[in-house]
Structures are given as C-alpha cells and as structure tokens.
Image 1 (cartoon, rainbow, N blue to C red):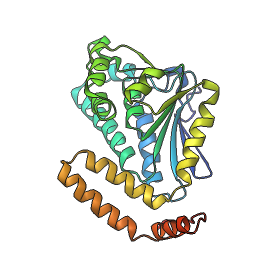
Image 2 (cartoon, helix red, strand yellow):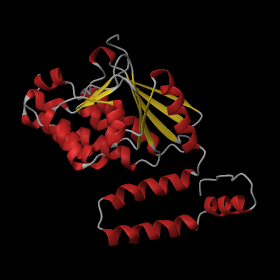
Image 3 (cartoon, rainbow, N blue to C red):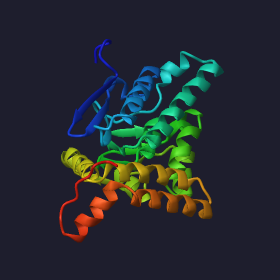
Length: 261
C-alpha cells in the first residue's frame, strides 16, 4: 500500500455500505488514523437513510490484527494509551448505536482488537480458514477492552479461556461459541455476506432500527426493566406505517412495501 493511500475504503451498492480496512501490509491493524476514519464513516452512516446495512471487511491476507503495537510503543505515555482505548471504545459503542446492522466479513486472522471488532458487529460471517484470538496475554497484556465485547458475544467461560490462554480458535469453534454466525468456504464468503445483507435490506428499516436499539439496551437491564422497554418498543413499532402495511400485506398474501415510518 502506498503511503498516501486511504487507510479505509468505502463503497456503496444497493443500500450496502462496505468499509474495507486498508492497511494490508500491517494486517489492517487499528492505527490512530484508521480508528478516526472508521469513526467518521460510522457517524456519517448513522444519519444516511440510503444505507441499510454496513459490512466491515479487510484488505489483503487478514481481517484485522488488533491495535498497531508499533504505534503504541512509539507513544508510551499513559495519556496516549487512555486516549487510544477511549477512542476505540467510542467506535465500538457507535457500531451498536447506529440504526443499521453491521456485518463482519472475516478472512485470515482476527486478533485482539480485531477479534473485538468481530464480536461487536451485529452479525459476522467468516471463511472456514479464518482464525480468532485475543492474544495480548502472550505479550504480557490482558485484552481488557476486547473482553468487554467477547463476554457479550460468547459464554463467560469460552471468553475467559480465550483471554487467559491467548490461543487461536478456528472458524468452526468461533461459530460453536457464538463469536460468529457461521463459517463458509472461502470461495462462498462474499456470496454469504451478500445473502445475509440482502435479507436484512428486504425488511423494514424502521423496524430494524427500533429493534437494534432495543436489543442492546435491554441486554444491560434487569428482567422487569427489559420487558417494560420491549413492551414500549413493540407498542411504538405497531403504530408505524410499516407495521400496518406489513400486517395487511401478510393477511392479503401480498408483498409488503416499506416506507420507513
């Protein structure tokens, strides 16, 4: 990659915005510049009604190898580290707060903050040769921020095993443990990501946005509060034009027309 080439590429096709991490010689490690670029794009996408789904992909041989360790060692102050990890945390929470679902398209390796990125996406599809690890422990660094994502995507013990050992798991194991939705042969990766994205695009954008917001808010609540919030969300959703059109179309055996309101 040339030094003046963008670290993040974006392409929009039929409502699907694909963000490609473009630092292939660094295995798409999350430099300061790349984190900033991702934040800018997600902030723009959040208010872009033409975007229905976001796909995160990686250029070259890997999805993402985590934070840029060389850049971190070149900036050894605590203030820099605090700013870096807060920046990354803001990006991860932004991904859950935008109305559009985010799909990880994973190939090669996804390690440390790269594995965190996969875990924070709403959906994830990986090639069957992909491997996943939170390997900071191997260099004396417990992957504390990736732990936040992993414990919300996997069982507690499965997440802790990865965090304590730093060992790689296969795509098949990642699927079994809930880190990804499914693994497919490498040649089928784009088709499967496209199929999943198209399935989401075919639904009401209003219902998707309301449902995604509810999903992440209720996870952090107690049972009673979660049901109260879910009940209010359902009631508001039922008042929408999309719900009325969808129910009427179902009753009349017709295809629904979504208007996003």
